[in-house]
Structure formats: structure tokens, C-alpha cells
Length: 295
Image (cartoon, rainbow, N blue to C red; front, side, top):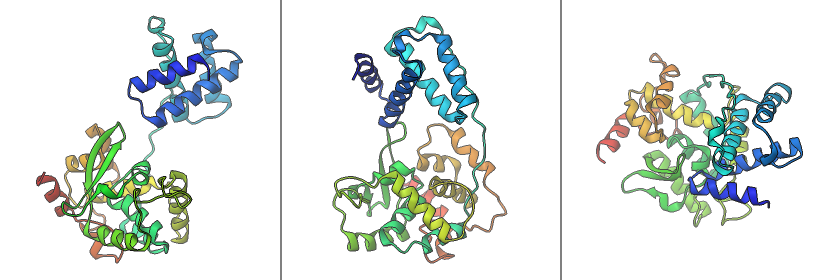
């Protein structure tokens, strides 16, 4: 490992960047260096801009991927190489804002019904009923469940923040059945190959897509669609947007407010879908408010 890469890694750790961010930044800088065949220290700012243009126009990378590369190069030059005076302004293409397709209550229930594997169903239900990000669901531990307070502790979620979210009675029942059958020790959903490691996100996403295909659902989107559905269904049932913000772990209310564009007031989704389907892992909006107000 080069001295420059070691220094950049140390700089990212000192500034509290998440592991996945550090990994993507290092990968971006390595590819950048390989493209020009020399160390980044000897690559000029105009060459950086040309590289980003190449990634966007010739390699046809998504705007979001180009922005990751831009952020990585900006960190390298401004922080590690200490060139803030260079006014290193990389062009940042705007990411097109597209609204996701929201799964209905019936579609969510159908996904669960078409998941016969007890562990897989418990994982999908937990992701939906607690409104979790994929990485958060994979890294849940047994000790994160509190059945006395009916909460789930999300440790070091996005932005390195802890939070509490819902543990609905229906989900608790499902998790108890799963625990009796599998007896996980540390991780709530361990890897099938190594019980000392959590389930891999790629494996979880494959589980979701397989269940969605079996249910005959053609809407686009990966497992994150369950988190979108959680937020939208709560909003449609009348839950306060600030409560949803806390449950999702959003630092900015504007991030949560986008669900106003996804919710439909005339939707047939009721406030308590658990009574409409045999498998919906839900707590009604009234329960959501009671949990938040009791803190």
C-alpha cells in the first residue's frame, strides 16, 4: 500500500467517514490513478475534470456514481494533499430526481406470503415493519430487540447515529418463531456460511427479488422499496411527519417530506394493515404516536 493511500485512509478515519464511504473513496482514487498511469500527486485539476467527463459521457456512469468519484477526488486534494487554495471545484452533475414506485399494503403482504423460508420471511418483515435500511437490517443483533418497550435499537445507522424504531406485536411473534427454529446467538440474521458474521446485503437483496418475482410484482426497485413503503403507509395512515422522520433516522425533515409526493390520501391502505392481511408486520399509526410520546 502506498504512503499516499495510507495517509488518505487515516484522514478519512479521523474525520469520521463511514466504512463504506472510505472504501468507495479509495476505490475511486485507485481507478483514477490507473486511468492516467501515475500518482494522483502528479495529476492536475484540469485532468481531474476531464476524467469526470470521461466517466459521465464515455463510460456512461450514473450521475450518482460520478458524484462519488468527485467527492473522493475532492477529499484527496483538499484534505490529504492539502491544496484548499486551488479552489478545486469539480463539476457535479445533478442527479435526476425520480420518485420510486411504492408497494401497496397488499403487495407487501404478498411478498411475505410468497416467502416460505422462516428466516427470510422474518428478515423481510423486520426490514418493512421497522423501516430499516438494508445495512441496518443485516447488522441487527439479538440484544437490539426490547420486547418490554417494544422497540428496536438501530446502532450506528447512516451518519453514525443510533436511534430507536418500532417493534410491532405481529413482528415480535414472527421473530419469536424464527428464534425458536434457528436460535441465532449474536447477529439476529447471521450469514448461513458463518454464524459469526451478519447476513450479506447482496444475499438479502436476492431474497427480496426472488419473493417479489414469486408474488408476481413487477414494480421496479430493490429491497429499499420496503423502507419506502413503511414511510408512505405511515404517512397515509395519518402519522405525524416528525415521528416518521425520527423512525427513519433522517437528519433533515426535507428528506422525509418527499414522501408527501408518494402518499395518496384516497389510498385504500388503512391505518392498521395487520388486520387486513394475515402476515403484515405492522403497528397502527396510533401505536406509533404512543411510542414516541412515551419517550
